[in-house]
Length: 226
Image (cartoon, rainbow, N blue to C red; front, side):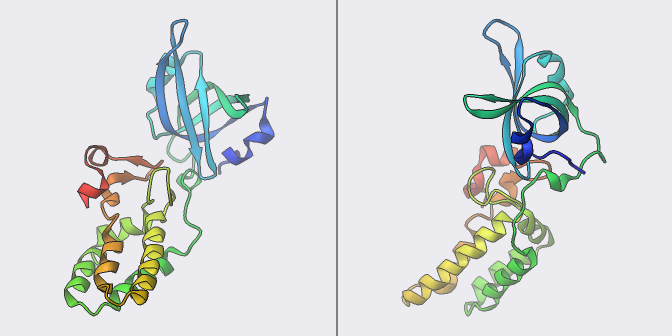
């Protein structure tokens, strides 16, 4: 069980801590006076913090990859009025040493209730072709599973597990209101667009240890993938 979360680090300012964090960003950079240092962004489900490793960075860098959960010992300090961690030792965490749920924020809403609400909108369609189109997506086991889990973004809006589903259901509710206000709008087509507008994010993003972009996502983006 993770004992120290990023949200708690202010209590440990000017102290040394040992704990597990996800290395969501990792960069080996040149020092001004020669040598290398590691620039990191560490995350867990409570937030993120920048970290630096000034000593033995070149030796430490190969022992973990960006996106890995790491175990580290670091000094909690302040730089330019912001909390930062000065890393002394770091290594990749071993399987079984941590709970993955500690490192990814998740929706506060009931995912199954959101999924039922989404399917309820589709069930209400009068257009049989649009209904069949959306059923082809929602009844695909792989898509259905990913749709329940995926974030809507890496770091912008709804950047948490279940965020994409939460975002789409919210948007469909707004579209439903708009369609009632403007009777000339094709309601089923509008809701179809809302449901599918971010469908490419199921392949653009990855969310196993941290939120990041797939190679396909980096090269194409969710709009083209969709």
